[in-house]
Image 1 (tube, helix red, strand yellow):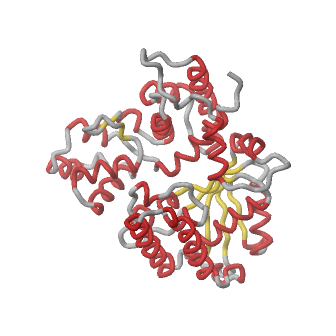
Image 2 (cartoon, helix red, strand yellow; image 1 turned 30 degrees about the vertical axis):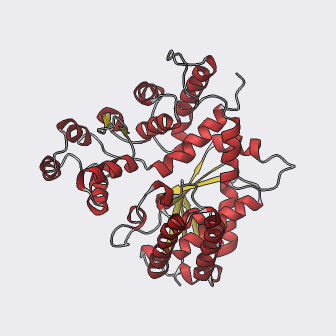
Image 3 (cartoon, rainbow, N blue to C red; image 1 turned 90 degrees about the vertical axis):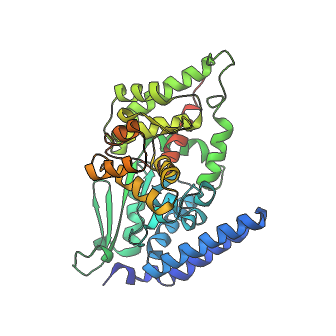
Amino acid sequence: MDIREHKFFYGCSVKVANQAKAEFEALSRNMDKAAKEKALNRLNAELDVIMGCGYFYEFYLFSYIFRYSLLLRRLISIQGLAAYSYVAFLLGISTVNPVEKGYPMEMMFGYHHDYPPVFSIHTTPSFKPEIIDFLCDAFGRESVMVNDYMVYVKGKDESDDSRNHIFFSVFESEIIAEVERFIFPSNVSGISLNTAMELFNITRLSVLKPVYPSGRMRESEVIIKEHIKDLMAYCIPEDGYSSDAETVERCFDKAWDDTYEGLLNVFAMVYGTGVLEADLRDSDNKRLCTRDDFFKYGLSIFGNEKDALEFMNKIRKGQGDQPKFQDYLDEHGVPEYICDGISKIRYLMSEGSLIPKAQLFLFRSSCIEI
């Protein structure tokens, strides 16, 4: 039996569509006519792909896990390519609104709609076993397999067909555990990650405020900056990435400019591969660090989303040093230093994956005494 034939998923396509539409109706009340029409077109287009390709099972499961976490007052951050999905945003799975950001749907599904949804969960060490127990209760213990941070929910059919099972990753984070203790006190009912981040915005002190006109940073900002560096060097290994304090230090020296965007650049350099060495900027002197940055830069070169997406994908997959690709860039007038930098990149993070990390680290740093 395909896992998608399980009774847990009965009627889930209708539930996903109805919930997304209901959230859109509530959200669109404050939109002007043009913005509402643009967002509605995106919603309908995504639902067509999700329903037509059978991706609604994944969206339903992760929206269910998200609501389950709120019921238990546990904090989780769901990441992955879902950050580019408007339906995921409406279901609460993602905190990024791709319509406002201008991210095309193809960044989530590909131009042939052949990219299955990719999700990962970041949560506390104590809640990961509860997520596994929830899946075992829903699908049966024999259907749930855990291999390090990968979780597989498999059907009874022994086929290796990937469409016969659902898989995703679950990462444990002590930082999320500390934030959870702060925002979920015993006298508060469950709140969403968006609400949690609003609390974070209120309590993060002056770390994102501009420096003095003289260029001198406030003492509290310096302390917070150093504290974040210590946190990153300490916590990155637990997220499954390899880095060290020296790399973090070098990334801060390159990218930190006392803004939220600057911190995202730091994370993009630390979590990406070759981004620090590439050290690229566009014609407006904006740093190119994430998939989103290179997609937008590709738009400025090629003038259309399809070529810009292909440009970004080549770079994020570490194929920027291929002779044919380099010749292609030369033909389109890409500056030599950009071509040289692109050839050094082996992996790019997406902004959607970096935002929750930066928010959680800043939230943690804002709780220290100054």
